[in-house]
Length: 246
Image (tube, rainbow, N blue to C red):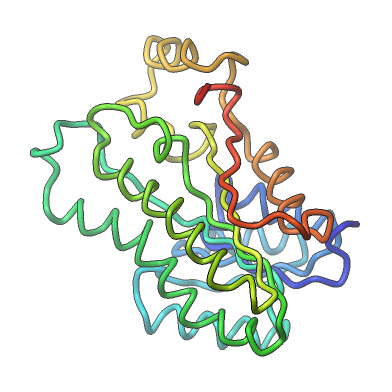
């Protein structure tokens, strides 16, 4: 029960890594707001863990502002903020990615971190406590061809994590990131350019431990970094990647 008495908000919490984080946080004693653009998915996970479901478009300022209001109304002060919502574009040469796809990737993967900071950091500063976790990617450390703008968005998130950590440390707020390798999530097929046995075998050959990451893997790492056990850890981007970035 390392998160007993804590309140947490997880964006993109209706599926994949976000659902794994929400479930682990609940198991560790936290009260959880499951925020997702898919309201049915959010409600399903929230019902499973006894949490609160909120629909949000993390790329939209008004929607994030409403999320902050609803979360505070439901659970009070938010102790832990997890910026997990993310999307990718399909693998293709960088110059062939449409402007609309580029804008959407940067809006969801990068602008969202700015928007949640606007609407959640002031209250954390006032309390002089809080933990923020950004779900980045091994793509931000070890980029692959044909995912150029997704790679760049995750590299941005890693740099944002570090600068947020430095700026917010005097206010008692810790900021860390996780770099998962691809896992059994709705984005897996897009990362691989199609979910085929051949593509799976090719991707798995790049992971020394020989398997994809799971929502449980990411939930376990997230629970540690957001707990008081990690009170001296800020500004890290922890690989949860089976050794892929070595």
